[in-house]
Image (tube, rainbow, N blue to C red; front, side, top):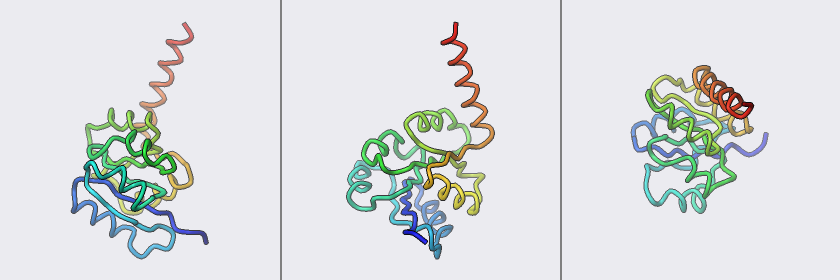
Length: 145
């Protein structure tokens, strides 16, 4: 077995960060290397302190584009709540590989999503995948006129 996937959590909710840490506790293939709430220290924290393979990023805590700009090697999995789908689409455009609904994701789903994203695979709900397909189809129709 190779080195564990190094995961960082960026979320303003400290209790949620602790819950997520608990989901991965004791795993051989995933290691939580740190967690932080939003703030100006995120870029240096990512580059110099934790150097994660995957960031679990609350969509309201920091823009995915900021994370990707300072840690291009890091794969981003955004966390969101209902009504933030437009922000998720923006994060995907900025290079995030997937999303998890904070209110409707089980520990098993989160673990599977982190593993998938660490391999470069996309993690999308059927609803959001449908919106992305619609958006691409609309762009194609506009460009083919």
